Structures are given as structure tokens and as C-alpha cells.
Image (cartoon, rainbow, N blue to C red; front, side, top):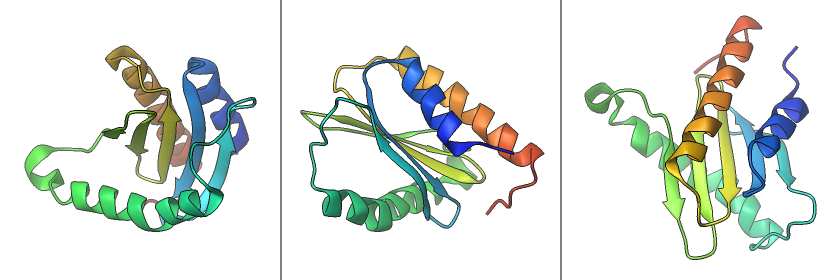
Length: 130
């Protein structure tokens, strides 16, 4: 069975600049939410919950409307002065990561490869897609 906590640990091990990992199911229900040990959140807990509930679905669903024209959405990113957000969509999960602001394309691709492994593992287990 797919172990969400193990996936979270695997993603944290990719790079110390990964601050936070959240995993949501295809209905945007939070399955896992964890800040890296020793790292403080920049935002209040209520703001985080509101973002997960409102902003993430709106951003992803809006970007997905271009899928017939542009192809599969691999990653959606938002860069702030203090943090970099990366949202990775699979057929059954949405991963939201907060990273230190100075990251490179190679790390984003490495995370994307790990996310695709999560997708393949979920499909092998027969988890429902969208």
C-alpha cells in the first residue's frame, strides 16, 4: 500500500531547501501536511488551510483548462521574495511544496520525477483518479 508519510520523507530527503510538503487527494482533501523539522512556517496555520482549500484547487483547475491545447500539466510554480511554491499534479494526488526561494530547475525536475513515482505507485494500487 502507498505510504504517504514515506513519500513525504522521500521528498524531504531530496534537498534541504524543501521546507514543507502537503499531499492532497483528487478531491483536494488533505492527506499529509508536514513542515521540515526545525523550519518555521512563514504563514499562520489558518492561512495555510485556506490556501489548501481555496487557492490550490482554483490554481490547478484553471491551469488544467489549457490541457487540451498545451498538454499535461507537470508543475505550477509561484515565486515570492521569501519562498518558492511548487504544485505537482498527478492523476490521483496534488503535492504542494514550499521551498527556499533560491532553487534551480534541476531540483524541480528531480522532485517531479519523485512525484511521477508516487503517481505510478498509486495507479498500481488502483486508487481512483479524477
